[in-house]
Image (tube, rainbow, N blue to C red):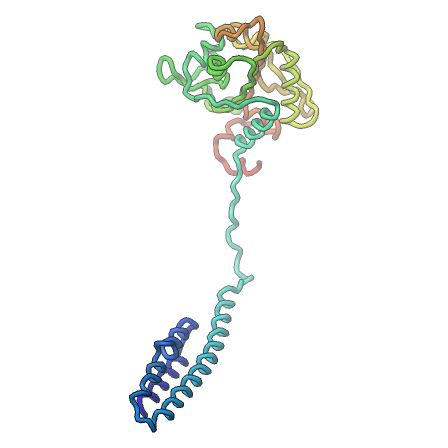
Length: 327
């Protein structure tokens, strides 16, 4: 057996032993490529005697044909094997127990309620403005017409950071910040967290959320307020909603009312409202003889509680998935 026969035998053994298509491709390049072993053997013809060259060239060409056929055959075998292996790997065993279902995320009910609030109020022409949670006493009380030692302070026991700053007790504190920078007409709404030093129970919490709405323009009256609240309630609760006003006191409005809606056969109080007190307008250089305005506010939790019949305010901040997954 000469060198050419040994080369062909070695190539055949490697082809038969190839375990993958990629290995087979490497073998093909090794023996049949332009720089492969058989091409190198073919270049040896020039070194042989003339009478041996033709026979040697024929042997090399025959070896090429043999190896090409063997490569094709082994390639088909490996392709079938690889397909079978892939099918076995991808097969689904229907007798296996089901895996854990993926849990889809969802918005917190308060987040969803605030999004609905914004959509409704923006649609009614109100601009949303953000206010700070750490508020100055001047904006939280003084700018809202709270006299010193007024009994209304008793309802807003709160968290003071120092003598002049506190965690806001109401989003109404934004009024002063807006009025000192803008001139009428304007329509403003805001939402956010508020804080009060409360004994926590089913209807009270130290942390809660409010939406506050106010506008100032010429000729604004209680009729505008009632019409706005009726439209707001209709959008938030659906259908034609009756709105009822009853006299109430808030330092920053005059006259002041609490407003209720007729919902599922009974009257439910939602929040406080009224015409912005002339003292507040005059404080910021707004002529109260020419301009007037209204303001109303309510708890975001209250809206959701009314719509879905939730009876305990504490549930919104306890992160109990049994409660949150209901919405």
